[in-house]
Amino acid sequence: MASGRNWKKEYADRATYLKAYRKRHKKEDAARHRARRSMKNIPAGHEVDHKDGNPNNNSRENLKIISRLKNRQKGARKTNRMR
Image 1 (cartoon, one colour):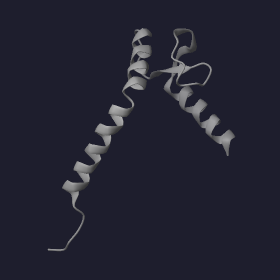
Image 2: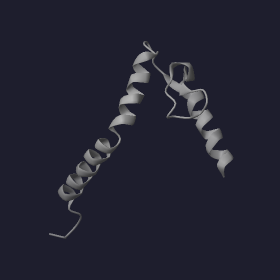
Image 3: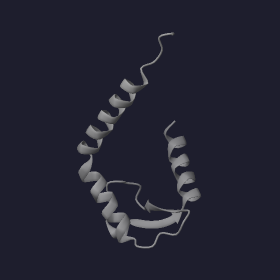
């Protein structure tokens, strides 16, 4: 039997990392979920977008619902400008 990757150990390490990550980012996740819930009915294929581009500004006035495609295009434009 050839020695290969230890999948069980990798899986356990990944699970430990994700648990720690979630614990560190609990406040941001809660704010994001509250903002999303405040938008009520988001149609399928749509996402919540931040008008000012600041993902930490989750005030109701800063959020809008746009199609997933438009949101991805907006992110791609932002990424390409940085290069």
